[in-house]
Length: 343
Image (cartoon, rainbow, N blue to C red):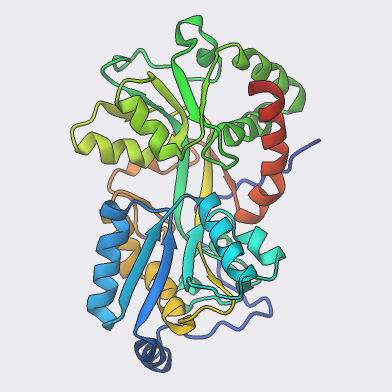
């Protein structure tokens, strides 16, 4: 089965209408309606202390609207929303996840494009209005610098086949872009199906540990010395940990896989206007700078990350970009290959 990959440049495109009403999210009428609701419930995969808590506090200070957040990985968030919808009692107003297309197919999302999304490149918001990108996740290997001295780390796919790494690597076994299945998709997209499958069969001989946890937790185990190398983790997480004194760094293995973290609004949310206002705030210049200051990767091309090397530039650091819709189509295929070869 061939996979279609779309490469995108960093040039901002003009936002155009696609039959979806582009209402002004931050106009006074919406602010007033959101303030009447008084609070907003947010399910997030973002690190609480690093981003969710400070952004919630900034939003509360700006609008006087209380933010209640719950952190979970993408799969847990999607399952929770599905269960709430089936029970007829949706508890969340806004969420960030890779799984928006799945909920869209189930008719569980509200179409809304925030005003602040207009200034972003067109590929960073859904033309149907079901998601708006907030930040980029650049997926690369990471490693423990105490166990793998700088300069000795594997730098290419071929290097990962070196017998010295056998039994020393780990990745998430979840079906997501930040996991073994995500790595499989990257390899197939880069090498093609025949060569890619041959490579993956050889890689299976390296006895990579499949951990049923989020990529952040896999990296934590590597930092703790359980493994030397984590495959398919968020490169900015290594920077965050390194700044806190951890033996952590990332590898500019090319290409990287870049996935969009997106915000969406569920149908029948208890505080729909507050949810819309929070999404607009997230993609505003102020919200994008909050991502930068937390060492995340803003989607706004005019707000570069503090460590510019983290963001692929298409020259010294090459990447493959996938939208949530493309991931939704491809992940089941990658997951099956993972089960067939690596389980």
